[in-house]
Image (cartoon, rainbow, N blue to C red; front, side, top):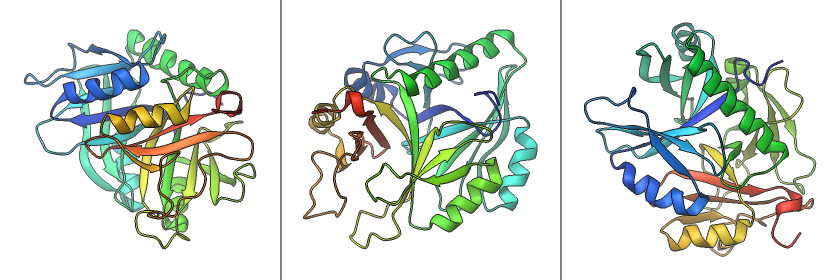
Length: 290
């Protein structure tokens, strides 16, 4: 099955009233570059594409809005956004933005899952230029998972205090399969496979066993590749991020466990200065100290 099959995470969006605060934080931290999309700007509000270092195609965007919501969401490929909105609401999702046509580019909708986590549905356009761009984006993300390039999105993660409700929803909604990650050192972590995929593209962390305040968050977040997770985490902290899990997490305050797997995979979970959650990770060969 194609990497661009329905049910795949194809994009991420950062919503903000002030795009400059987003570019000012993530640009220096992860080496991102940015380009404003003139075709998607509405009423002076910009839609700014995000490119990882050396990437020929964008992997996400900054959506300037007029509300105080400072959020990040993943976008999932759909063949029919209108039909999927109805289907997903019947499964327990809530509509935030109904199915909306954007010029001749695409159709999208924003929803929340049964635990209030924001996500988007995203349809492919018949525009050849758009098809080439989104296909190139996914090719880059797929390559990043096997040949890591710092700054790129190579993973996503769901954290949940209610794994049954969460897995039931995403399995019914998108056909995702959840398999225990035996390399996670005994952590309750599950790899997420999209329909027909040979390799996982995300993971689920079961927080239901964490009783310490702050450890059992429900969230959905993008994860970005880093050459040195510890160093990047420290830089993020100095720039105003909060470390929830990682080299600087405080085990006396939050029971989070170690910041690496037995195989050498390093990771961290943070919130940026506006509270948007994101992850950092590096595969074994790239982990600090490996």
